[in-house]
Image (cartoon, rainbow, N blue to C red; front, side, top):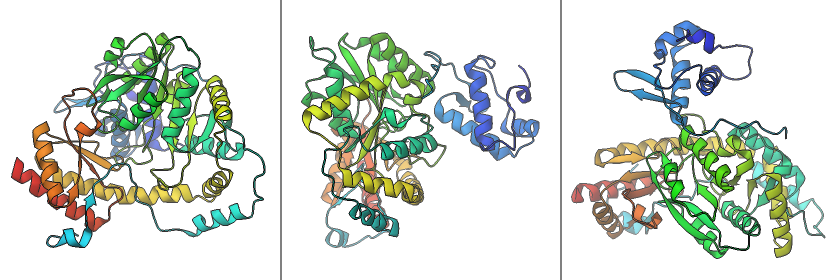
Length: 465
């Protein structure tokens, strides 16, 4: 194999950080077959000496590529290049714990998923709504795609926060991710009225998405997930009328799996071969505590992906605003659907969101939430790791503890009797699945409430195990 210094280089005048430069170089070398599958990479110490950087810089790059699925550490052997499947990336168009008496003090406590920690109202928050009050009352219906200034600001946000290079013309402002999904399903179903369209959906998965699909007249086909997310090999079993595949690739809900690059490519290849769309729900990608957020499928396959985002996991579920990114023809269809339904985005809410983005409030909120969630993520992992395999650690605002189904039910019942409600994976499962356990959310509770809830869960797990 060529010396890594001939494959990867670092440039201290490059605005990219050194770990990003190294990761980009290795990724490109694997993608172009200059480094073959099963090749053992140099140790982090050896490569750091070769590139004249700190060892931690190389370790950070390796960690990122491992999370994305390019590399595979093997205990006692080193780090190896994984064998990838799928097609190559297409060329882009230019465009403190309480113990006794807590039930009386706290009332019922729910370790819910999806409900975020929200900081107290800030000066920027108040200023945003003052900005709205200074704008004349809107007399006409707004653009069904959303305010162009907000869409441009969202394109900038997605580019720097998610590495998703898009433009205002490819964005539609929605009232949340599931509203965006409903609009996409409505638009896609109008293309072929001769048969009932099918949505391929992760199992276990986000049940609200399947409800939305059925409401719009779609059938749902369950595709199993494993520890790496949706099992793309099983997509070959989907009906010929499958028009879309719904996935949560960066933090599979609810199991926490990270869809590897090989599976992402296989998913893109499937979509193209079936003339189907991928609906990518990127519901909590802002929150990763181990490596940088993983690249989006929309960046890999922009012509075949509808990308969904929302402020619900950052600014709170009561602010009904989100966005979708889609190919131009799908955006046009969605605009027609919204006009036909009289479904327009709120002008005042859009103005407030634009003010928050311009003022940097979004970034400040994300940074503050990351600090809170990172600590809670560690607390949950430390408390529950002795009882089984944990999934989703290091990301989001929930952790999944894999358990035997009967044990999970028994633990949930004991916790409920003590005033703490926690969901089992069964509530997110439509078809039989070998993945069973508990989903422990930690977003909306206080630190004291989380500590108490974990005490109750540990007691229940100890009793049942």
